[in-house]
Every structure is written in C-alpha cells, then in structure tokens.
Length: 330
Ligand code: SAM
Ligand code: SF4
Image (tube, rainbow, N blue to C red; front, top):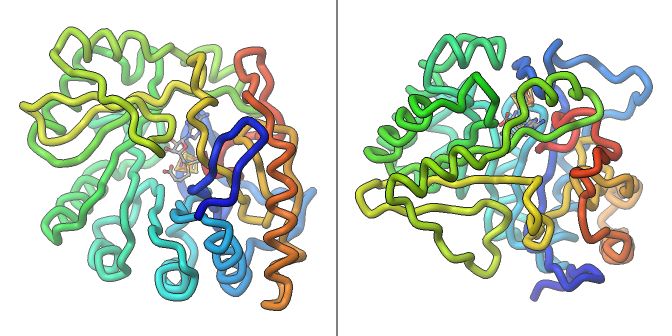
C-alpha cells in the first residue's frame, strides 16, 4: 500500500535517486564546463549500505519504483552492485535508470543480466555533429550501437529523452528523423522542454522553446494522445498504430504539469527534495546509518511530505535550490 501522500492528495510510488553528481558529459543546459567538485560541500556520495537502508524504508512506505540517476549513474564503480541490492534486498519492485549511455555498447550485457526493469537514455539528436555540439562528446554511434545490443538481448522498456532546443533540434527534419526511428523500433521517444535552473539562465533564454511545434507536428501526422494511466507521471504520450514506438512530451511549463507529480527526489548526498525546483528539502542521511533507524527514517520522510508545495512556480522564474540538474537527477 502506498502511504506516501501529500496534502494535495498526490501519491508517491516513485523515487528518483541520484547516486553520483559526477558526469563525463558537458551538456550545454546542465554542466557546460563539465563536472566540478563542489568545494562548499565536502559530503561524499551515499554508499551502498545507506542506499540499501533507504530503499528498504521507501519500500515499506509503499514506493514501488526507484530510478537511479545522477550526474551519470553508470560512472559509479559499484553501479551494478547497487542495482543488485535494490533488486534483491529492498522490496522495491522496479529499478530503472536514466543514463547518457556513454558505455552502453560495453555494458549492455551487464544491464540485461542485472535485471534492471527499464532504461531511459538521453540522446538530444540523431545527427552526430549536433549531438557532439550539445554534449561535448562524439559518442552517438556507440550509444546507438548499445541500444541495438540491448534490443538484440530482448531488453524491454527502453526510452529515449531529448531536451528540446530552439534552432538546434526542433526542426521538422529532427522530428522526422525520430519518427523514422520509432517507426522501426519499439522504443519510446520524448522531448523534454528545457528548464531554467540556477546556473543556466543565458542558455535558457537563448534556447528555450515551448513544445507546441512538436505537438503540432504530432497532431498533423496522425498521432493520437493517450489517455493517462493511474500513475502515468508527467509525460503526455502519443500513439500511432503504424509506429512501433510512442512519442511523448514532457512540458514542465504547462499549466497542469504539477498535478500529475508522482515523484520525490533524493540527492547523491542524501537530501530529500520534495520538488525538482523547490526550496524545501532536508538531509535524511543521518537516519541511513543503522538498520535500527528504519522506523525513524520512515517517519521523517512521511513528515517531510507535508511540506510539499502544490506547484514548482517555475513559470515565475523560481528555480529553488537547483543550480543544475546533475545534482538532482533531472
Ligand atoms: N546523466 C544522465 C542523463 O543525462 O541521462 C542522468 C542525469 S540527467 C540530469 C537527467 C535528464 O535531465 C537528462 O535526460 C537530461 O537531458 C535532463 N536535463 C538536464 N538538465 C535539464 C534542463 N535544464 N532542462 C530539461 N532537462 C534537463
Ligand atoms: Fe551529464 Fe546528464 Fe547533465 Fe548531460 S544532462 S551533463 S549527461 S548529468
């Protein structure tokens, strides 16, 4: 049973857990100068034992799905051990990841064998030059190779996310390239609207574009919006029977975006964040130190939920504690 509920009646069966702030990419909207150690905060990233205790507490609070994210979650040496612990010892039903896929061609077998229930891969463009321009890395080919490997291994639940960027990947040609991709692959593709964070105001002003053009494209090309499932989350999905995959749009600036919020976040240093952009959030790591603290940890998480606000207030430029999404996992 899901016990995690806020004062607006929203339930939280889903946690995004960042396990590292480190990332090897330099996405213009996130870490344009690459990852830099935060000298003002010398806390380490949560260790595997802390993760085990946290996951147990969350599962007892009714959380059924954890998404491992970052930074880049697969840079952690103990990444597959973490997955194993979540799969075997936590009571969490589904463990999924969000990754930039930089090692996907090398670790596809391990991913399949780990029992992960799904993978979201960030690919901002199918054009290798554009991909390099956005991420600072010429790795599109390897990532696509990795996806092929996963498909050949019959890995289910692969999704691709791209941040929609004005003049970079928002042309009809870009949309057509992705349409060709989802036509032939049972893989869902979603555009995420660029979000403003504490660090990226100039980039945001230059490249933010509402998802409207893409939605018009979908409407003009016989894609039909799928009605929401119970715990559907914030992506609006579109179906077309001629295509194997779905299209989706994640538009954080749309009016009703926060109504479907079903997720909480925990940062790599053990802070509970009630909203990606909120100013509220506290450290809960001190209660991940001993098995005997389980009840106290559950209690603290439950109490914190009362402080979750109704909306992120992004539309009025509130970016809260979020300097960039590498700390909170997007
Ligand atoms: N490194 C992994 C990756 O890129 O998939 C996981 C972490 S990343 C922060 C998670 C997601 O957030 C990615 O899909 C990324 O494109 C997205 N993201 C990062 N900064 C963003 C921003 N300012 N606006 C919208 N999406 C953003
Ligand atoms: Fe790294 Fe992901 Fe941020 Fe890109 S979006 S810099 S891959 S954490």
